Structures are given as C-alpha cells and as structure tokens.
Length: 87
Image 1: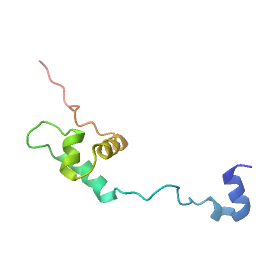
Image 2 (image 1 turned 90 degrees about the vertical axis):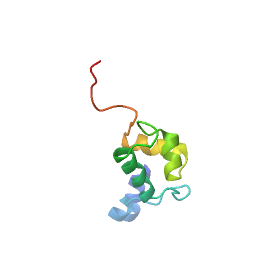
Image 3 (image 1 turned 30 degrees about the vertical axis):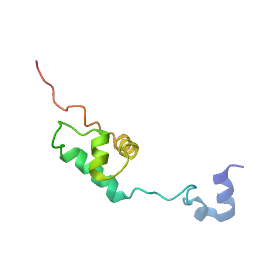
Image 4 (image 1 turned 45 degrees about the vertical axis):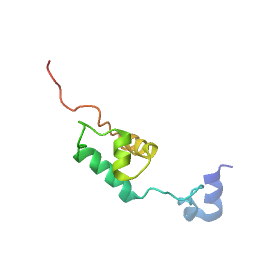
C-alpha cells in the first residue's frame, strides 16, 4: 500500500496534510531570499554592468552557492540582456 493511501486509511482527510520534512531547518530566511531577488532585479553593482553570484553573495552576506540556488529557483539570469542591440 502506498504511503499516502495508508495515511488516508488511518487518518482520513487529516492524514493527507503535509507533514514536516526530514533534514535540518532552513538557514536562509524568506527575507534574505527576497533581498537577493529584489537587488538582482532592481540594482546594479557599482563597478560592473550586472551582478555575478560572487558579487551578490558578498553584498548580501550569503554564500555563492546559496545565491546561485536562489537565482536558479526564480529563473534569474542577470548576465543576459533584455534588449536587442544592432551592431
């Protein structure tokens, strides 16, 4: 019997609610994630044309891999330009 079906048989509808997930608690807060997303979309670094994962990580105090995961989750690609340039 599948896990969900067994939980339904034992607890009916209350058994289908999401249970706590295994692993440690999150270390990056929603506010930190929001700060990374907002800064990526609305600002540019002082000495460059776009943010890199390293420069954003230094700016907000997170690791480079955390910044990369946040950008990947939200589909952010600050190195790509939105407009077309005719050369």
